[in-house]
Amino acid sequence: MKTIILATLIAMPAIATEIKEVRLLTLDPGHFHASLVQKKMYPQVNPVVHVYAPGGPELDQHLKRIEIFNTRPDNPTHWQEKVYTGPDFFEKMIAERAGNVVVISGNNAKKAKYILACIQAGLNVLADKPMAITPADFRLLEKAFIEARNRGLFLYDIMTERYEITTILQRALSRHATVFGRMEDGSPDNPAITKESVHYYCKEVAGKPLTRPPWFYDVKQQGEGIVDVTTHLVDLIQWECFPDQAFHPREVTMLEARRWATPITVAEFKKPTGFDHFPDYLKPSVDKNNVLQVYCNGAFIYTIRGVHAKISVEWKHEAQPGTGDTHYSMMRGTKAALVIRQGKDQNFKPILYVEKRTRLSDAEFERALRIAIGKITQDWPGIDTKKCASGWEVVVPDQYKVGHEAHFSQVTEKYLEYLATGKMTEWEVPNMLTKYSTIMRAYKLSR
Image (tube, rainbow, N blue to C red):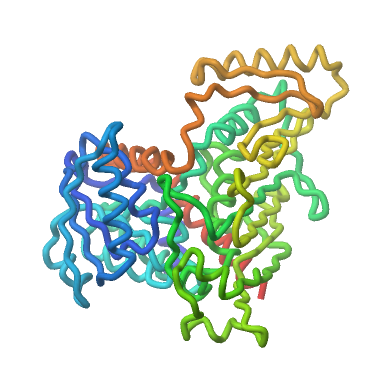
């Protein structure tokens, strides 16, 4: 019966009642992503936001960030936060029904339960990734999607990386066969698609040093690396390499997966958390030298419709001054490889390169590339290319380099569009199910 229901989810577009005024509910905001949804105002969103949480420093930090947005000199927001705290915060939210969309971004151990309960209560959900960190969570998530379909509700995760300009252009160029050719199948030793990212525990958000809750270092609460940031990377493979296509989990085959730990000393733990000791729930992961071993790193190789892809995520303590989180992305076609690099040579800013793999002369290939770029500029005026050592660099005007934090507003605007029309793009739900199914397979194999 479950297989039949999931097949129906994948085959049918999501349809819900149109919502003209959105009233936000913020549930237990333990992660800074919850505040970034409110970094700007939206015409169809009521400025009064009801927040339900147990209270404590995580809630205080969330409210401080909203206050920063409300009081900044340029384009200040005017959110009005109505806060309820107490041990019955979730029950209070359901009973009061002060809104119609719940924003969930916090402790990932609770997230799948929260999502399912909110959907069962008749509330739409905009959730931060990952929506599931264990196979048991994934089963709850499947139930939530079924309930959402039955109740005419929209459940959606925040995939910010679709809005990064180099990713958008990588996707767009891959659709021009005169430049990219066709996607190669690759092999386990030489995948056709590679996506790698490196993240840091210590960094700045909204111009301030980020404070992390201590549970962020607990993989039972935050999730292992193989199920966390990988959500973005698997999503991008589906979204970029197979545009506007719906997937079924059976089209994915997991080949190999592994996980490894990042050592964190007490001093390193204190810098983002403020704690000068490891809480008791972290003690099982502390070695004999009093160093915390966090399984926040993961990598896996799989095939999707026969194309080999490699995913890798790594966490480190702190980036060097002037650097930050980095991303590497490669899509290899029969005529060219499209590569995003974000290292020292790029001043730690993502840059897209086109690397020729065809026997065409440079002049012939550049003519084809310029024709393709000319078509892309219809949507993105000002995009250009220039010759470089590895091939051609795609030149992007600064106006499109809005930054990671701004992408949360862009995702929210897309979700609001779905709510306003009562229709979600047909491939969104099946691809979310396929994405989390893929990650859960990697999780199991890595063990």
